Image 1 (cartoon, rainbow, N blue to C red):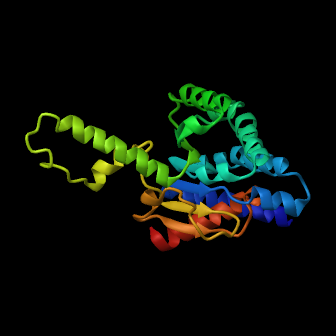
Image 2 (cartoon, rainbow, N blue to C red; image 1 turned 60 degrees about the horizontal axis):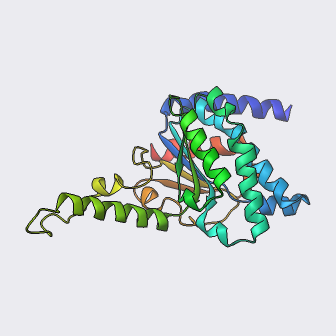
Image 3 (spheres, helix red, strand yellow; image 1 turned 90 degrees about the horizontal axis):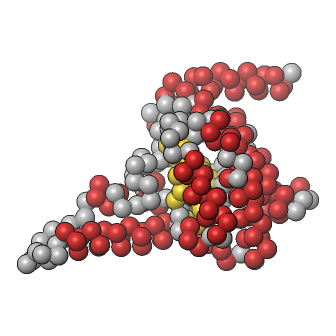
Length: 252
């Protein structure tokens, strides 16, 4: 009876919240290792269950008519973990999220990549690029996979691109400091995937109250940040719906 009531609540909330068509939700997927420890399972299995949840949760965002979802699956900081854990994470991302890419086409979802992917294993790089290519014509929700990502490296990349463009424009200018100003709009054009609007909502699971160098520039405008205590593999539709309901009630 409780599960039926919960299901009815989820259906009603989903239909109601879909009216508002929120543009962009970003998520820091945190808690796989703590979940594994709490459940007495291997870290590999914890990562696997976290990866499978991405597939399960995407249809909810589609029903909510969210246009973009950014998922922080691997940070630059994660490279400093022990090599076995890093390898396990890469294998899970490759085998359970990316290689079986039909689920994305079935949902008419398009994949874009944000991150310094040249630091990833070649097999994972190839899979990411292949998935981006195979889904580029899809017109539904855009899944922004943030892998080998940090705002620090994005800032470095964007700054270099800006300087290169400035040097090209001003190569024949007798006064090279004539137009060095950098507007917000101009800077945004140099970040990863500049066509993606700033997030309306950022969710971090597991109870940690920090951003871990994720989309720092993008969320400093009008993004509402929610720190949810539930570990990522235990997140369910109702957890997400409650966050979005709060956003709709208090910030729209």
